[in-house]
Length: 319
Image 1 (cartoon, rainbow, N blue to C red):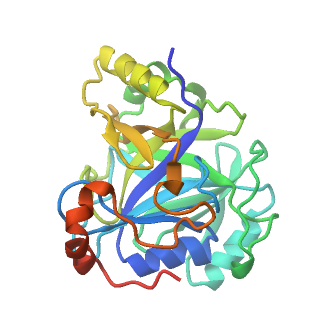
Image 2 (cartoon, rainbow, N blue to C red):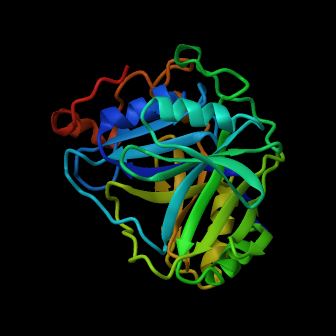
């Protein structure tokens, strides 16, 4: 059976590029990992990556700021709803204070027995910082932003999916994807994402029969996909064949993302999942190690369109 090992990244479509960059790097203390552009279609839109200084898989959040083209979606059911990142035990109060001081409404709550801080990206997408004592990753520190080891985000904790019928997700998450169901209650269902390093990462699923259907296209204000790490190409392609063989045929061919390779599959609960693995060159393909995320870079297939794309991008100061 093909395996996955934790998350690779999470991707959402946001609003303004400047507010997006400031939110992740200055408020949350993540580091710029890559600045490039949307590889699909023809619209000039940034693709921004944030995470640990070296861009370790399982720490990466990526965004498409859609303010300039003005394409916006609807948050609703049958869609990923919440981005969740892991923080050290006891760090929740620090984040509640920090976020509220910066004008971002935040509150401490508990779900599935875990204390967490609930707040929203400036474009409205819900985020949570979840206290986890089962996470050996080193916290991401950022001295310039006043974030040290006691409070720094460790990486991805998971994603919350809202759907009309959460039972429809069970076969997909436990049979198509090798996850383990950990809890099932009135709060929802929790699935453990396997991780070779023992990092606790999860998918949480809740029932929502009241909201409108959420948007599935790339559009501002919505989460686009949750990406799982297959580690290498053999695992990715074997897992893709396994999923397709079960009848989940809404699955893409492999796509070249320059720094990693991806396949996308739509789950029966609506959320889009990605199977991804980092290529040997990784982030250093077009920027030197230690200097990633410092410049705007383009994939080789856009060589003849660089001037056009630059001219169409939103103005922003990435500093």
